[in-house]
Image (cartoon, rainbow, N blue to C red; front, side, top):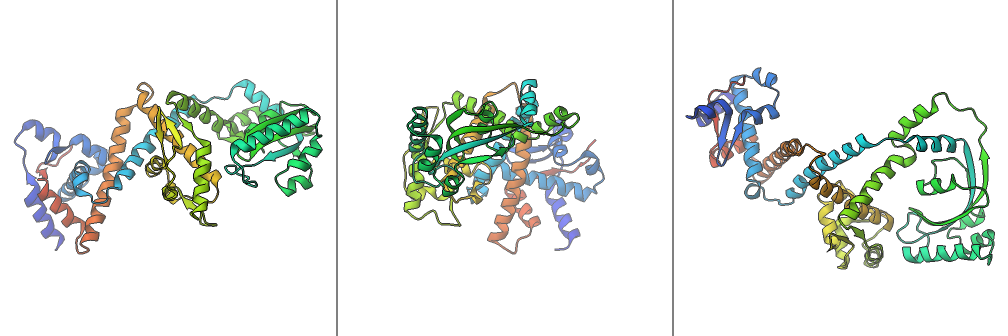
Length: 428
């Protein structure tokens, strides 16, 4: 069909004048159960850009916007694949999470005491002797034990050293999980501040030679460690170092920003009574391994973990027990977990924590009425959802009938939902 002929048909179908004066002033189009206002149009296209369009182009723009709104309003009856609901929910969650993160960043500041501590820590190197007790959910997975068993063993090691049953050297020889640790007698260093997990850094750089610390949990497992040496670094301090250091910290260095946001997540967990059941997660992973769901190097997707048939709760939220099915649903509505496969239990554990943090942040957004412009957020979300649903519907119809083109699909929508575009298309 030629373009001029198609334009003529469109104008013939949609060129209606609204009888109401108020509608003439405000409505650009109507459809069954809804309308396209001047405000809707200006959100969709810049006013100056719209004025430069020809009359046919204006008509096409409004028609397309009306179709987007129709698909949005009637998505349940128009769109066959109901998994699209997860994608629209993801748009909403992402926008709320973005608002929360921006709020936290605006509030974030580096105290003078923190700045002084790190400034001085950068001038000192430490050497430590470390015994690491790993478990199935730790990043350094060398022993087949549960997190609780790892903690209990680390506690025993510390007590034996404190009671002088064994020396630290003997403890390394007896309890080291990894051969390379035993070979170097557990020695690590000289260490610079910021190279280890923050939990370790904070304790080490407040300790003196001879001190023994632990059990201390990091992503690698449980540590019991001995401060061997503290050395002042012999180098000049860069000019204005504190000023540049403050900027680096705000950009994420030394993991202080992560620690700051994590502390908020801990508060949200308290507000919504959220707890992750670590032992049950450990059991779930063992079930997945026993059923050969976990295969190196492909790993296993969180979306497949219900195949393990494990029904015990993995977490609690506001006195409600949630299972792997709940986490699978959330994974489809947050982030990009659909593409993520786990090659070890540690990544499963962290994904479940991340999902709970995201969920709690969204809940906190919903109850925080004073901090956010929720109306603006919802408008942004709707525009994004309308665009997504429109593209999905057009692709769906073309898949059903490859002979269809976008203009024909819009034409059918217009007839089905009585889309009527104003004849007067000016926008002052």
